[in-house]
Image 1 (cartoon, rainbow, N blue to C red):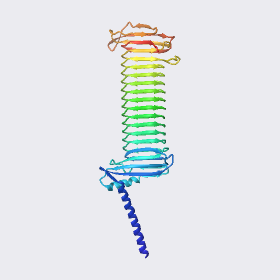
Image 2 (image 1 turned 30 degrees about the horizontal axis):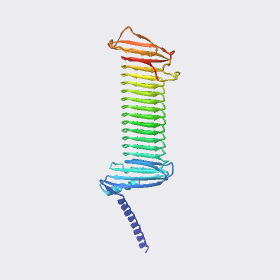
Image 3 (image 1 turned 180 degrees about the vertical axis):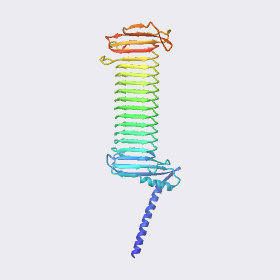
Image 4 (image 1 turned 90 degrees about the vertical axis):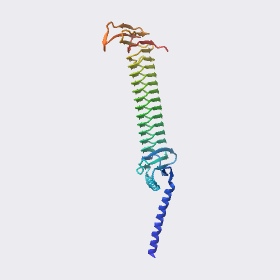
Amino acid sequence: MKVTKWVLTILSLATTVCCICMSWQTLQAQELRKAGRYFVAEITKSFKVTDGGSLEVSDIRGSVTVNSWKKKEVFIREIKKMDVFTREEAETILSKSKSSYRQTGNSIVVAGEYYRRDWIKSEFEISLPRSFNVDVGTRAGDLKITAIDGSIDLKTSGGEITLEDLGGDIDAKTSGGDVTVVNARGRTNLKTSGGELDLEEIHGPLMARTSGGNVVLRGASDAVELKTSGGDMEIVDVKGGVDAHTSGGDVELSNVSGGADISTSGGDIQFENVSGALDASTSGGDIVGRTIIGNAMVTTAGGSIDLRDVQGGAAAKTAGGDIAVEITLQDFSKRHNIDLRTAGGEITLFIPEKLPARVRAEIEVSSRWDSYNIYSDFPLTSSQEAEEGRRRHRRQRYITSEGEINGGGDLIELFTTNGDIRIKKLVR
């Protein structure tokens, strides 16, 4: 009798286990559906958490979207696409994938060690509390994070990154996509090896680099450092200083409250309303500037220079173009040295009528047949060297004018080769 009961108990347990296994297989089969050549499944997970926790998604292949909500809960919805031959293979992958979700205290981890291969891809949609830290790493996929106040650490090897309304520090890197950031309030560090940077309302320190795209920044409240090796740059409304460099494009800069250091190896530079000192250089383009409340130093190896409303001193140099500079400084106690040099063009300088300065202007004439002169609205002495020198088998002569205006002061030095020099009183 006891043996019979024991046998019946064993049979009952076996039946229960068998039913559980059959139920699991049935559940798996119901979760899977065929879409073209793919087996597709949906996984949903929910975890109770509190503010200040962390989410880590690592080693997966696919896109990730993270949004905040008011619940004290992390909810994850994963759509998995599996390019496999049989349903059994898909069921095995699905089973292992579910076991990769885990919670330790207030930390949620999703690991992708079971589906690293190219023929398994996922799309994640994640909702979590706003005060949460997010760390996501994907082998290939786009990343989008919205309305999170914790720290953000993102890495993708082949996708775009979109960030909106973030309150914590940001470190984001992609090897092959654009980066878009709108309304970031912490420190922001961005890098892409093959995409554009589109940035707006950046309220903390910003460092952003791309190896192959344009850079657009509209609105920043702190120091800005931008770099691209192959694109144009447009920078507008920055309350801190700007350090911006491109190896192959134009640079446009406007409404900067701090100083600016900008350079390009192959494009034009335009700037307007710079409240601090300006240093701008290009190896192959024109430089045009308006309203610099400080000293301006600009250099181009192959273009013209046009600076208006410079409220400080100015240094401008070009190897092949005209130079025009307008000085509007009113406080003559500030340093206002001016040094303008071109190897092949005219120089025109506008200065206030009462500006105190020492002036030295010189024209180098390489042809005996050409006629150039120095014209000044201020009284200067003029002389032409009687002797002609030789340089590189060419005859040269020099026309010079110098003198003190309004009792003398900081030096104004002007030099050109084969071009006129004009010093004019500013009329406003």
